[in-house]
Image (cartoon, rainbow, N blue to C red; front, side):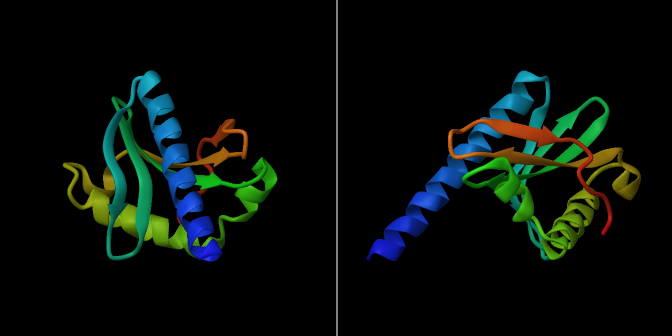
Length: 122
């Protein structure tokens, strides 16, 4: 029972972190093109759009920023890139769409740091 409760708490904390990051992008003039978008390759937490193109955002929440950053592995980055390719197939310019991959690190206090262009094709 305790384990299930911890899992639910972590799930809801992750959703809250994603909401906070999504609101920040919207405040900065981005529109949301997708939330928890799932392709065959994996899931993308947030997809934001502005006049320049798309931003695929992975949100990582942990006790501190370092632990959050360490939780993103190469395998997960590959899955995110694969899902992004699938999303881009529905865009007018396809793979030629201007895009980047950001990572939002969220600590236990709810503070966050956004790393723009955190990774590319891996």
